[in-house]
Length: 274
Image 1 (tube, rainbow, N blue to C red):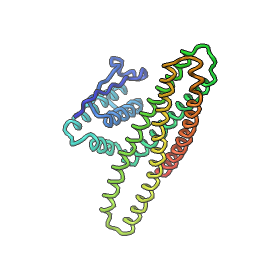
Image 2: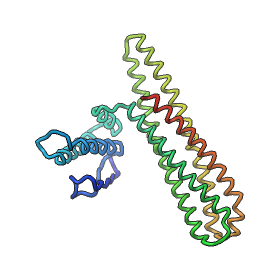
Image 3: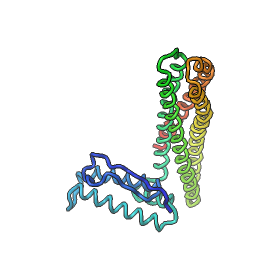
Image 4: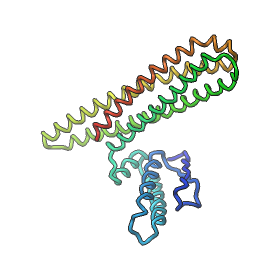
């Protein structure tokens, strides 16, 4: 069922696993996320826990038990996602909490992506006014900015997909549970709340995806510019590409504006869930 190997390096502060620096887990990402969140909480709480074992041994035993339990459940269960939700609910974490977490993650990734694109725009401005000197170094710096922007864009895509997945499951569960409510007034109130939450989520989703869709064209232009410089790295080439660099800077500015709008929508949505 699980084909990927997930590797996690243990932080130096976790002294109770001195003999282990790397853990490999044959689990799906969602379950791995749960596992290490739970493990971290157990590690933090173990110092004050009452137990016949020393605190750090308690955390180690809890970690081992959780590994075995989740691995066994995932091996026998019907699917990773349903197992993940069921296990999270056992720990008191509902889909509503997961959606909030995914929205915050998507928002934070867009903030970081915005910073990467700002750095790239600054580098482009420097390149357009470049009049000689260390051209190779200047090019490599710009290429590094492009690579960073590309990587961050991929992470943003993933965060938005994760958010959408939980939202679909949350709203589906909410609708099914409304059907189980027999009191008319309560049923009507729940429907209204669902409708309002859906509307706010759809506004957030639209803002996030608008910014997301703009990244692709900007990165395509950016890549073309970087490759053109690579093929003819001299002052004349930079001068001839000045108009292209200006266009890219303009598009990046628009992208950052869209990102800021989607970030504001995310903050508004998260406040509504509290």
